[in-house]
Image (cartoon, rainbow, N blue to C red; front, side):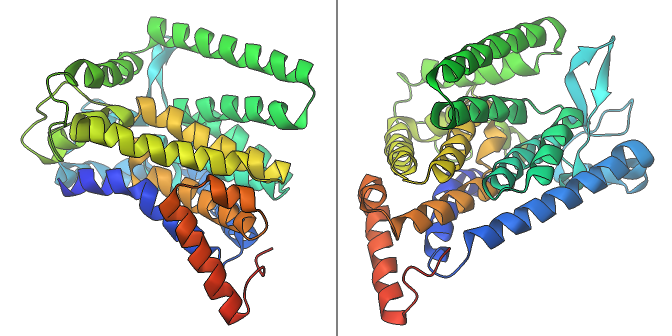
Length: 345
């Protein structure tokens, strides 16, 4: 129950951290730290994946996972998700997991680090994050890069390029989905079925099953899930809270999207919109997207960048849901009293 509650509240809490921190903190400095962490994580990923392939076995990851209640692959001695679900050349690829010891969280982090590095014009780091996503074999990161390409061409290229990018993105998604269906061990199907199961169960459980009774966490930490919902963040929301959860998250995400689209600076608008859309799409088909390890960097960044724009733009503040807009007004008022208003650059 606690683990589920943590995931369902994480996006709200980390967004508020970013919004309130924007009163004193520098979004540029935060971006620098994320870029630096990205470089360190990738360097370690190269070390554990290519230079010392036995690193995790020697470090005793099987014992750690056993204490977490998670089984490791008996043949490899590694967690199952250390290898891709897709078959290439007749075998599953060993994935780079970096400092996260988890390719799913690592992939989503790399995309966030890419967007922030691009926004603050650290081109080498952005390219490194893009290339590093390949050995991670992260579908979440791949989806994020497609979203970024579409959003970038929407605001920073002409209409013809945008249409071509949109068509290419859709085609790439369809081709990749077809590839996973023919070569995957069933991971992609599980994610999709988990999402659909939530809505199929909604008529009989309109207010959900309650915290701790739905999804991967229920099977891992509890006595088993009470529904077929699994591997989907949106499915976990529907399965746990029902129509109430759908309503709350819809208001939250729509208000956040309006705030992103109201930002005057185009680079900031592209960065925030790409981060938000990538999170939403990833959340639909991945329950891990709601965990702090995946969503924290996204929502702190969104809070900082939106908070920075709030000090300059009335439309962005008006676009926020009322509680968040009220928080921003209190932040601005406190900033004026302390002489800090407008100091974030």
